[in-house]
Image (cartoon, rainbow, N blue to C red; front, side, top):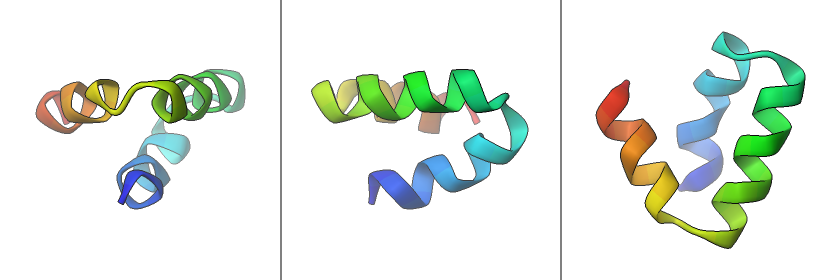
Length: 39
């Protein structure tokens, strides 16, 4: 599910930021919920 949420985010954000989001997302799923609400 996390990959599906971050697929569009990867396109909108830069490669460096996208990698950071994925790395942080693996550590805490709460970030995914925040991003889902933001977008």
